[in-house]
Length: 224
Image (tube, rainbow, N blue to C red; front, top):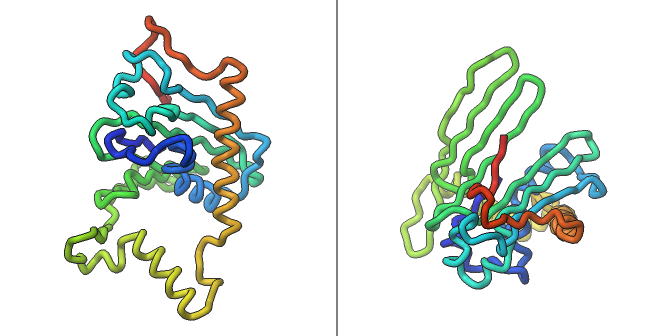
């Protein structure tokens, strides 16, 4: 799940693929890493468009023009070739500039939840087989920020820096196998993102794009 704070949505627009591709790509990468390749024929998706009733999507009028072009919520699901079922929800519903993200994995006796992995306050909760208790701990991350001194721990914990460092080192040593994600791997994630967008458009063609009536509920997305 990725819920973008619309105050941070400066570059979101149809021309850059909307929230699924722009902000959900990292989550799609992880889905593919955990569960394997996707059966694209199983991809389904619904959306709440930005044209929904203003009282139901109250922040739309305050979003910038590029962000307004996007669906405010996309709810997608699909099946992997391994048999695993995955769902993804992206939206631009939060106020301010702090976005929210969660990754949750289920298996036999296992539940793992990683909250806000893109921040310095990430938390992971784990429940293991044979236990009825979740163990929770903070994930140490410090980010390198432009114009500020580099925190010593950031050199070992900033995921963006570490990814760039690995790429540069692979080029410097001429070891392309050290690049964790190949061009073709990235292309498959984009293929999934576009399959979700295609499924959204099909649902709208079938009249399934959610247009909230003036008398409808104020909730835009509910998960149970």
